[in-house]
Length: 330
Image (cartoon, rainbow, N blue to C red):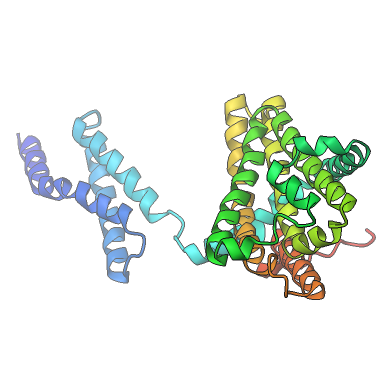
């Protein structure tokens, strides 16, 4: 009787503390920036809960009270030992280490997608040069009529649309094209190849058509400042899309679904950087590229300079990543 009375007294004395556990744990889980006093309080609660759980396991091994205490103890353990949340350090790690690792893994796909784009552009040039009537499949009637009358479709952009609105429209279009090049990779990579090849054909065909009317130099002048990074980002998004296709064709996990989810999570980091690079392209294409008073030499400097920034971002060196020297000899 004395044992039962002692157990009842212990349960009664601890019941109020256990009732407060749920709101305490929820508050600790929601907030990641704890003060020193809150951290000490959590540690003391952890010790106290551990003692109660030890007693409950001996006295009431299969009771609901013991199981509830076990769940609370496990939850508090995960809260105390979780990694500290520092968004600045996490963001720096993302751009300095994780994205360059994805780029390094995709280097083969990036090379092949870029080669496909270049070959498609060459094919577009040859087709339109040999059969000029094919330009109607690649360009709008308004653009064709403008070039035939000696004017590019880009000549009056600043007169028709304010630079701010133009930049926003161009940015939205570029991001949509890049996302499309990535998303169609779910068709086992074939959709990505089709989109990249189509864009290459269009670019080569338009240059061939403008060359026939003496405007290729003006078109090159327009695309120089933003084109280096913009076309590179499209190829990067296409390479990311091929990873989705490869995950479905040759899964690296137990199921194709798990393999696809792993690949999508990994390359989504690269798409974040691509979107940021396209924001810069949108501003350049909206403010500098259509400006006839902006000299060609300055366009080359802007284009090459932004290209160097892109390479620095893709390799992580722009964010402080150190060069790794390979060991020479054994």
